[in-house]
Every structure is written in C-alpha cells, then in structure tokens.
Image (cartoon, rainbow, N blue to C red; front, side, top):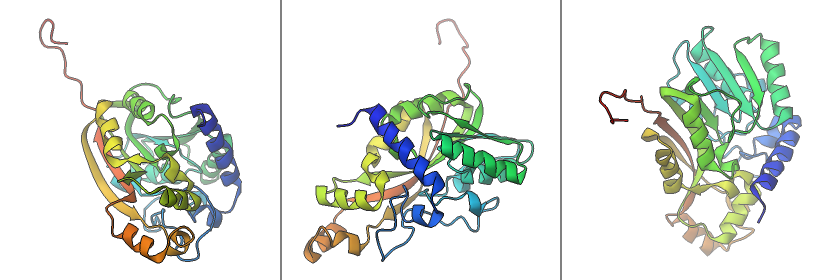
Length: 279
C-alpha cells in the first residue's frame, strides 16, 4: 500500500505528462488513461460546447461533469476552482462572475499551472489567476470564496475529508460549492475494479457515494444536494477481456456501479452570539 505522499507524487507525475499530451488522448478517460476502447469515446466527460465562456483550447477532456453549470455563480463573485488544470472551468466561471469578479485556480502540478497561465494571458483574462498548491492545504485565505467548483479531482486525493475541511475554511459564511466527482455504489467485483482502472485511472480513488456525502456533512456543510448523477458505463470490449458474456450480463443487471455525481452544499452563515454562554 502506497503512502499518501507517494500517491500524490504519482498524480503529480501523471498530470505533468497529461499537460503536454494531446487532448484526444486525455479525453478517452477522465484521467488521461489513453484510448483503450474502440466502443465508446469520452465516457467520463460532459459536453461543454454549449456552455458560455467555454474555451476549447483550455479543455483537456479530463472532467466528469459540468460543475460550473450548476454552481449558481453571480456577477462579482470570487470563485475558486480546485484542480484547475489548463483553466477550462475557471474561464467558464469568469464568464459568469464577470469583470467585477475574481477566479482563482489551484492545481497541484506546476506544468498545468504554467499551461493555464499561458491560456489566461493569451486571452487577456486579468481577473483569473492560477496558484500551484495542494488542495488539502490551499494557498487561499480563509473566508475568501463565494463559490468553489471542482471537476473530477477529489477522487485523486487520498485525504478527501481534509479537502472538505479546507473548502469550509476558504468559503465565506453563506458561500457554497458545486463539485463533480466519481463515486461507487455497491461493492465492485475485483475484476470489474481492475477493468475500470485500466479504462479510467480515477476509479481507484473513488469511494462509496454514501461515505462521500457523509464526509461533506461531517465537515460542517448543510443543504447537501446531488444535482446530477450519471452512470459510467465500462465498454463491453473492455469487460470482455475480464468477464464471460454471462458475467457481463449479471454485472449490468446488478445494483453496483460507477457514477459521476455533481454535488452542491453550503457553508452555514454563523449565528451571532446573542446571550452569555450561547457560543
């Protein structure tokens, strides 16, 4: 079993490579695992083409949802994007928050931060900045963000509870987040886990949906709502390398599976102390 630091270093190395490779390679899975299926393309990613503010050159095809479409961003908001990659969701958020707002992207990989900064500079986006850092220890002050977004990132982080704790710190009271991520429902047979991992590297860090939602609540958030849920279907040409036709049928008819979910939650407005001993 690798330590948390070893896992983080693996992620850093992998995403450094992804920052330099072609989008078509990345988009075959949410984690740049490569085009290993001829049956389905982009099973993780959602279509951004109709989203206002979308910048195709900044989309590496690594997401599993459209969190900015659900994030209720208002003009003038300060938005923080966790795992900002080449800047795609930051640029969509900038369209929503306008010239009077601010967008801060945080990414673990220096090569990604460099790519995102170049994308912002080329477009003259002066109210978007990118910071290199660990989202378990964000390089962002407390009570700064009106909104936090993230797209298929927490599944890569060993200490998910630590990230939610940091999100709570960084959000203003009354602020909220909308994040897309990969979760599991039911126990995947080891052979299915292996097949899924071959197709999409982010599955190995996914946890049970119920545990994921509980982590959000236990870190002080309220109003936890699943805004969207999408089943991630492993192509038959991948499954057939591991399972017989009958086993594939049984798996598809079971209640277990891999899902992309988009989750919303709020940081409560702290109640002022109104009497001695009430706090």
